Image (cartoon, rainbow, N blue to C red):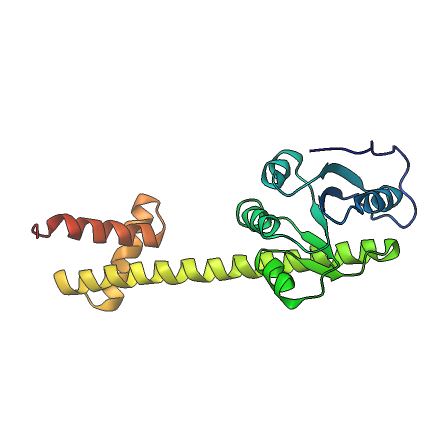
Length: 213
């Protein structure tokens, strides 16, 4: 990691966000990070690090905990996109890529790697803050959607476990579906467990009673 100049200590200007952003900059070949650095500092944000490549991005994100990552690139390389994808999976952050390549392929690959905003030929100081705000908003929206999807998948998986346990009780004990459900509910309450945990105990107990194959 190379910090090319210290972050100037100055009071935040009027247009700066109420909560200054911690920004990690990556020079991926365009060599314009000094312009980005100066504009971020002018707006009252903190550049926590400047990298000459994306090779160390994962470690730096973990160590420096930036709010947003900016990649300045002519066209993001395959290695850069792979490292961004790793960050997106392990320690997701809003990522903005400024690029000069208008081809569709690198843009699509960047978005698939978890990039929140891909700006072509748009590195203008006055646009920097709006671009960051859009990237952060999209990142938060995507994170909420992923959380909702994960919750729905978890609920579906748990429902299947409960339904399977009810089926075991109905077949082995002769309970009706409602009786099986109430039995599982009582087991869960008596043991201070969630319903799915009680259901899994029923399935585990049945598995122990099955003769070896």
